Image (tube, rainbow, N blue to C red):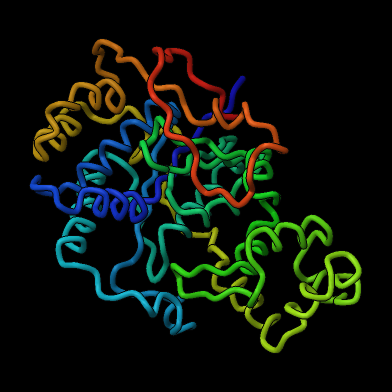
Length: 342
């Protein structure tokens, strides 16, 4: 018997993505509309028993309080984006989704808490986000549907095997990988001179960054004097350690969730789905939303071929680990059969 699946959605990530992708849209609430459209597509593809959407606390950040440099380079959010983030929280809550906005924390912490919660309740998790940080959550019970150009249907479900194929590291190595490489979007410089390929090679040889830092002479012998010099430079180890601390996700957020009944459990009330989609003038997708979210029978629609089909066709030798983009796939035939998630 297959395990039930919990769908954990990064609300901030998808709202931001929709906001900037359609920044000149004349439609009101365009980012909220984008989030709802992606949510419906993800539920249709994954077939979960429950949905949780996490959002950042907009008023307080424990990470910024502890590390003031965290995201310090980012300017103030545009008022229209702030308004739509608040509107998105209310819209998905009105649908019947379990919405979690953890005090002082971020959507990432909600995703990590879902990944920890599901196995304790005999379930598995599919995380939906455009943020690579979630790769650290991948494992036997958690896969990541990483949204790229083309939306849900053109996006791959990342598994441990696919992560190795893409980046050359295992999920348990991903935080080390990201900490060595750094994350410019969060204002977290990595170890100077250590990019993604070198970080992956270090982890392939030594298993962990700590093991490499602890044996610089072995690094010199295995990877050369240049890499050894960068790891032994002043501040290199401290930069890695700081990044590891900042990037660590909380996995103990109270989700207020049960998988058998209550808020977040599918199907949702048809009237609520109808009301939310009509209020946002999403009439063109309201019927699909009713079928997918509320189990109201409507004619099935053709689906696109998913990106993991293409990803699985590539051999590790032909795939470039430095590449960040997967090909956009065109719908070639109806895909009535659900692809295996685990």
